[in-house]
Image (cartoon, rainbow, N blue to C red):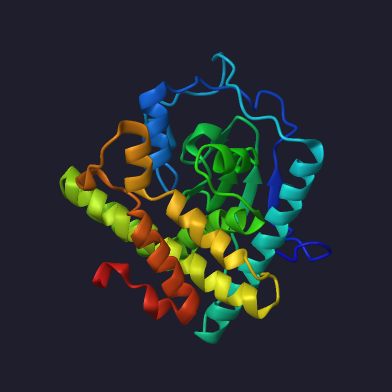
Length: 279
């Protein structure tokens, strides 16, 4: 990505230097698996795998980034967020409305959110209650070492996906899906979640389409983003952690579907191509 020297978003809240931010009980191995597969986005984090509050809990170990790498990731995050703001501002204006940007919160280890307590083991996530995206920059190391995805464009895809959830929230899609999930059984609720996540992937593709037009993406960046979408497919994560795949428990979609919907958004650049609920 051509992120050097580009404008960064001003909608960033940096909590990395705040005391007590590393608190939080470390989830067990089953908890980590569930968090990786199903707890990234738009949920009450306090109710997932018994995630406790921060105060008085054992310290959680998080990856330590090289100072220069962390500085670069901070810059990439700011540039990517600004690019998503430009893309969605233009899209909303074209359709006669105004885009309200999300705020990105950078933290280390753990932090409080309007959705409950967030921890780095959950990966990046969006909280609809405060309309903020939360990310621990050490997730970049998790992507490389645990998920097999690397590169600045892969990291940008993750951010664009989370912003996609914000767009869903602004459009009223996210609250409708959350309400529908409460009225059905677990299998159906999971199916609703998959459609929500695949749509966010499609929205990330729309951002990539815009980013290419503004000359932010380089030759191999699209491949990096697609590889990142593949790396977080439910089937791939489940097979890696438990040796077999249970489709009814999918909450984000298969690797093939995640790649396909990202590419669909990228090729069309049109939100009307992202109706996962009608597919």
